[in-house]
Length: 168
Image (cartoon, rainbow, N blue to C red; front, side, top):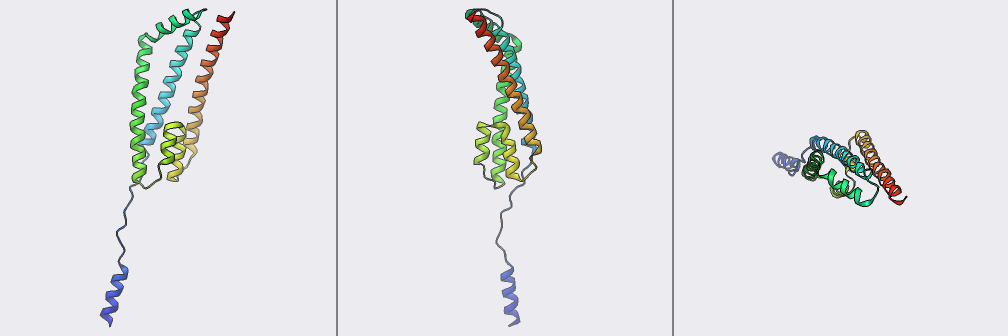
C-alpha cells in the first residue's frame, strides 16, 4: 500500500508542460521613438522650406514656379529621400516590435491600430500592454504632437499669407 501511495503522489506532482513566453525587450521601441521623432523634425523642416515658396510670389503662377524650383534643390531632394527611407525603416521596426509583442502573448489589435493611425500614441499603448510606466511615452507623445501642431501652424500661416497676397 505504501508503494501505491508513493506512485500516486508522483503522478499528482506531474504538471503539464507550460509554454514560456519570451520577455519583450524595449530595444525596438526606443529605436522607433528616435525614428519617429527624427522623421517629424525632417517633415517640419521640409514644411518650413515649402512655406518659403508661398512667400516668393504674388500670383499663383509665381508661387507654383517657386515651389517647383525649391523642390529641385539638392537639400530638399536629400531631405525627401531621407524622409522616405525613415518611413520604411520605421514600418520595419514597427512590424518587428508588434511580432515581439505577439510572441509574448500580448493582444496586438490595439497596437496595430495605434501604429497605423496614431504612431506617437503607439508607445503609450505598448507601455500599457506591458505594464510599464507610461511617463516617458506620454512626454514623448506630447512633444511629437507639439512638433506636428507647429508644423500645421507654419503651413497655415504661410498659406494664409499667400491667399491674402493673391486676393489683394
